Length: 164
Image 1 (cartoon, helix red, strand yellow):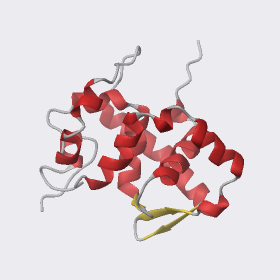
Image 2: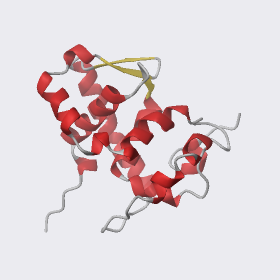
Image 3: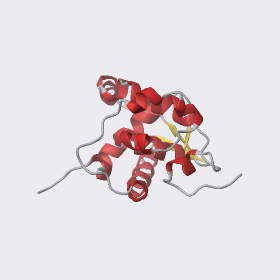
């Protein structure tokens, strides 16, 4: 039996990252933050497993509580985040090499003029990209503090965090 999951598909990862960068309000986003947004794009139900949400996400609890659990069993989220990071790194390097994105001092910025009209049409017609959950990812996540004991790294348990 062959199972497919978009987490292991570099082309799907490219689409996700480009769509995130296309719809994000900020002109650039931190490398770490795009990793978190992409992870929860794939595994939205894992937000419900967090004991307490960081402040900007607390206000979106109704959206998070409505998320359905997947049919499949979700293994260790920290391991999945680590493995997904390998695909994300490879895709970001490829996108940068093809001039779709610029990376500078840990910030990633989309070169919007490099996107084809067909890809933009695909983004605009994608139902997931217009749902409340995706909008919440793009509006709330960039406002979340990543570091410290109350930061997103600590609360999610997906990355090491620093005190301070």
